[in-house]
Image 1: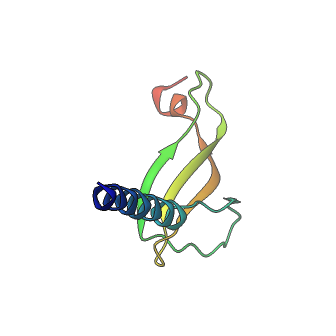
Image 2: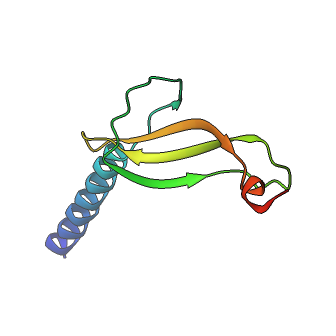
Length: 88
């Protein structure tokens, strides 16, 4: 019974360690605000989010991406709202 209990504790410890390591590897950095000429290191775009608006105007967009080192980054940039392409 002690051997089975020790095996269960070892499995829980290993699972917890894997979870902590994977969480640290995916930790996000602070949001970087884009300025003209900023050199970007984008290996893969994960998502782009923007607010919904019925008015054609510049709005903040947030892009989450993975850089060449495998780190998740977030970039804030201005772009026209979707309403601009719909003639509003």
